[in-house]
Structures are given as structure tokens and as C-alpha cells.
Length: 223
Image (cartoon, rainbow, N blue to C red; front, side, top):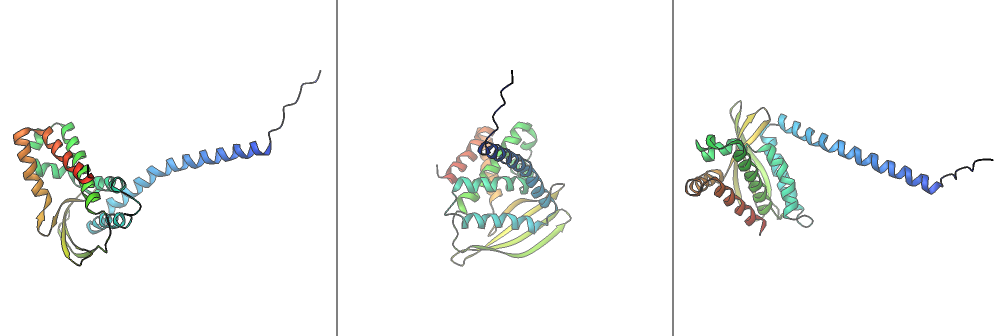
């Protein structure tokens, strides 16, 4: 008695199988390339000059504004957040804001502040740089104060022609150049926040500081 032979798969089934394999390969390739791309960008920033780091931020702000017709607050926030995590000296900012109290915070509290403060920075940029009306940044000068300290002076030209001074105070560690604070027309936003946060800390404690920052994030979102 002869065994019945199995029917050959149709050309459509073979084509579908090959297509599935190709899609699976493409998906695996993208998953592999994504972290490599992020690592490459991080390596480039580590080798970048202080002015190149600033230009990277300003370029993203302008691009976000030019894309205002197609992206909203959340997309702008999500674009900015990873970059700010790389180029902001948030640990140094925390030490400046809280002074000797920073040493008394446990590691979890420090991480909580760093994350929340970075969220606020991304939300502020996403909320304030939301539409393009001809704005442009232009270089003024770079002052190298030492091997690991610099001031990058820039100027924002608004759509109406107003000129706004941006002075980036920067420091360098093993991860590259990072922004410590930005002085806008002679005013340091970080110094203002230092006074606010310390008053809240002294009167209501650390969690109240986090709540205060979270409320500021919600205001930028328009909640």
C-alpha cells in the first residue's frame, strides 16, 4: 500500500512565509540598530565642544517649533527629554540648589529630584518653544575659563527682531560638556528656583519640593 504524498505549498503560501521572515528580520534589525544609534549619539556628545552641545539643543528647539503643525507638546517633550538627560549637569544643579542639605538626601531622593527636574526642563522647553515665527539663535563668543569650565554666549533673535542674550555656563566631566545653568538677559533661572525650592524645603520638606515641581510641569502642559 503506497503512502499518500503531502500537497505542495502554493506559491502564495511560500510568498507569505518569505514576507513574514523578511518582516521579522527587519524588526530585529531595527531593535539592534536603535540602541547602537543612541550610543553613537551619546559618544558624539562626549567628544563635542561646549558650543556644539549648545547648538544641538538650540537646533532641536528650532526644529520643534518648525514642526508645530504636526507635533504637539508631548512629542516635543519626548524629543527633548533624552537630550537634556545627556547635556544637563543635573547632579551639580541639585547640589547648588540645596547646598548642604543635598548631602543629607538619600540616593533615592536625589534620583527622584534629578528625574523630576529633568522632566520640568523638558516641559518648559516644550511649552515655551512651541511655534516658529522666524526665531533663530546666533553665536556671540565662547569663553574658556579652564579646561573643564566654559561660558557659551548666544543670542536668540525673536520673530519681532528682539534680541535675547543666552549665556550657557558649562562644565565638563568624563561624559563630556554639560550645561549647569542658563542666564537669560542677565537672569539665572536656576538661581530663582534655588530660592523657591529652599523655602519649600525648609517649610514643608522634600516631598513638597517634588510636588511643587510637578505642579510647574502640569502648568507647562496646560493641565
